[in-house]
Image (cartoon, rainbow, N blue to C red; front, side):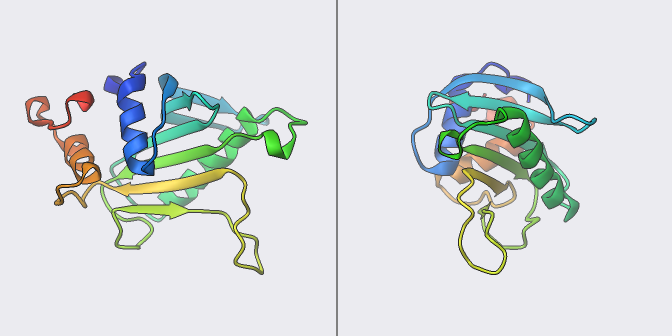
Length: 168
């Protein structure tokens, strides 16, 4: 977590690779507190904003329990309340991503990267809220692709063995 504090370049690389699109972070901080009134709070491991105003809440979790899914939804919900001023037009709301790196597959999809979108109950239509939860399974790290390299590096305890220089 500490290696990412203020490191816009590393977080830009990390998120650009996961989302498969170029993203430029303009601010990054660790242990960011979000308050949504009435004692509701969440703390995210890494919080970044990109140059288009989108927000990225990154969580680093070792224990992929089913409760993790509810915790990530809570993080998304509290951060939306905290980051969207009352009265904001729906069309003006910027994207918000919760990205959880975890040692396992809490979604039970078997995928390296799983995405969770909100849908309207009673239909298969996405809610198009601009928010998304993404889970990255750090144990799926055997490939030669950039996401597998990130997964290996994020679980490596010996900094000299990190293969992506920007993450070291």
